[in-house]
Length: 64
Image (cartoon, rainbow, N blue to C red; front, side, top):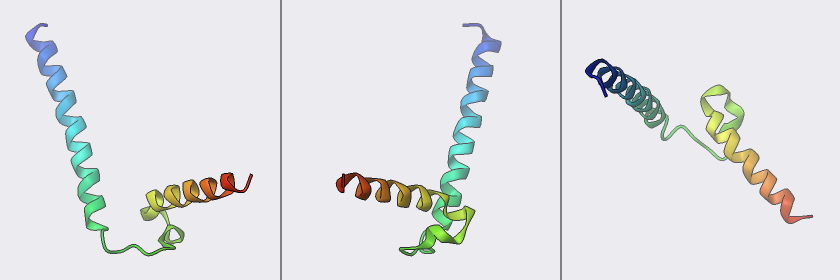
C-alpha cells in the first residue's frame, strides 16, 4: 500500500474513533438521568426508546 493510501486509511480510522469517542462521552454524561419511562423524554433518550420497543416486542411475542 502506498504512503498516501496508508495516510488516508489512518485518517479515516482516526475520524471513526473520534466519532465513537464523542458518542460515548455524550452517552456517559447522561448516565444517572434515566428512569423506567425516560424513553418518553425525547431525542436524548432514543436508545431507551429502542430498548423499550424491543422489550414490548418480546413481551408481545410471548403471548402468541
